[in-house]
Length: 141
Length: 146
Image (cartoon, rainbow over all chains, first blue to last red; front, side, top):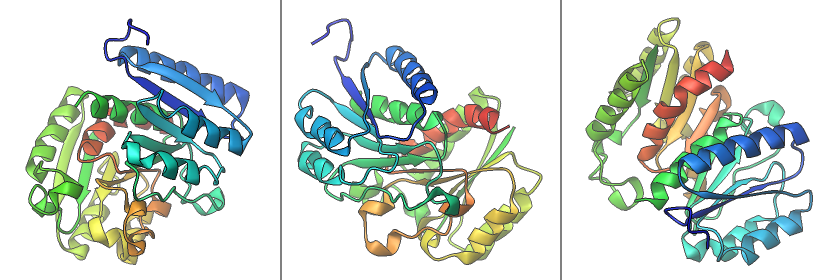
C-alpha cells in the first residue's frame, strides 16, 4: 500500500476499445490530476480485449476501492461485474457520448441490480471527472 | 448564468419515501445545497418540483431563451411523457437528465427514458449527491459545449 495517499484508496479506471490514443492520453492526464487533488491513487488501463477487461475486474477486485469503467462497446464484462457485485464497491459506468442518441448505436447501460452501479454519459472527458468526484464523496463518507 | 432544476412527481416526498433507495435528505436540503453551490460559481439556480406533467412542460417552454441550462429529474414521467420529450426538444440550451437511483437496475418499465434522447448528458445512481456533482461540474460543461 502506498502511504503517501491519506485515504489509501485506489480507483481503477478501465477503458474498452475504440478511443483514440490522444483522447485516452488526455483522459488519463485529467483523471490523474483530479485523483491527486482528491488524495486517491489512480490505476488506469485500456484494452482491446474484452476478456482481458473481465479478468482485470475479477482478479483485481481486492486491489481497488472503486471502479470506473468506460466499456465503449464491450458487453461481456457484465458477468465480471456480477461476480464482484457482492463486494458492494462503488462502480460507475461512464460514456463520453450520450449513448441514447439515435446515432450512438446499440450500446445499452449495464444492468446488474445486485451491484452499486452509477451511470454517467454525454459529458465528454467530464464524464470521468464527475465519476471521480462521486467516488471521492462515496469513499470518504 | 441561469440554471433551472426541474423535479417531477413524488420527489416532494424525498426523505420519507423509500429512504433505502432515495436517501434521507429532503428536496429542500438538496435545493439549498444546489443554490449555494451555484452561487459560489456565479450561477443562479432555480429549483422546482411538480407532480403535474403540464406544469413541467410549461416550465421547460418558459426556459427557452431565458435559461442557460436545465437539469431535469422527471421522476416517473421519464418513462411515459412524450410531452416532456417534445418540450425538451424545443429547448436548445444545455440539458442534463438526472436520477437519484439508477433506473436500469430497477423494474423493466423504468428502462426506457423519453428524456435521454433529448438531452446532452445523463447522470444516474449517484444518490442525492448527484445533484451537487452536476451543479459543480456545470460551468465546465457549459464551457465545453460552446
